[in-house]
Length: 331
Image (tube, rainbow, N blue to C red; front, side, top):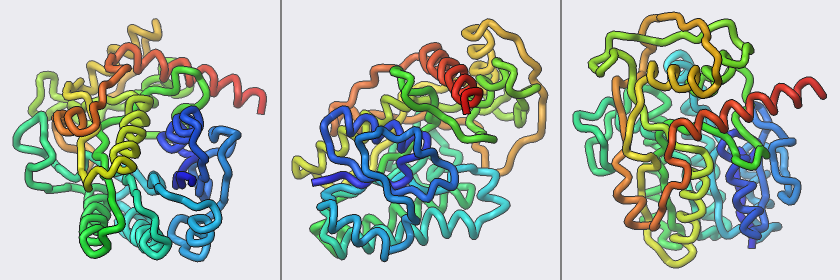
């Protein structure tokens, strides 16, 4: 049996592939490589270049490789971009996910793990936020992910042979402690990625979008989770499903938030480099503060973070940026 990882050449997907390979799983990656990288994928994994929304491609993969689990990362992830290009986000994140779910049902794949997002909550009235609060996404990105959660729930009800876990990610950051992969996308918008690039001179400055939020220092507060802990959460979700566990939606975060300015100060301190910080206007779709209540994922999966430390997250991100610079010089 094999595990299909969609978007396996991307940031989180490539970490997932390495985790699966390390655990002895047979892995197939489906990626169109619009933003992902072949070199980031563990060499033991089989790679198919193609679109996750193309059932003519997905169907044979599921059959030929005897796939028993799909871990679905492929999609678009930038909140402001989703505001300016909503149809593109509904296509990539919703329509194509619908095609993938349909292929899974047709092939009888029993396990499906979905990469969802804390953006489904919008601006919660209470934080830390638990899974049962009203879902009020404020961007097409959040709505496109929520629609896929709804499709999964409805499909699992109609087709009891399909069981799923949807993990609502908070802010993913850091890089593989072994230095095998990390956030490599050019023009990335993740705060710790951008701050690390600025600290190492790859950018002239970093912009803080809004300093008038109702938070302690006026900047947005987020829950940052190390990408390796997130990959481990997926491994726990896979074990849960294979053991006969039921359908589940769970937050993937630590339960503690840091403001934008706190993160920037941490990057400056850990890197030993000062850098220029500019102040810009708020971006559409950005809630003031959102922090996970991780009680469910800890109770259901026994998941225990191993890298719950902002300094460690930043150090791994900086190390990856340095390694990426060396790689780009070789290329």
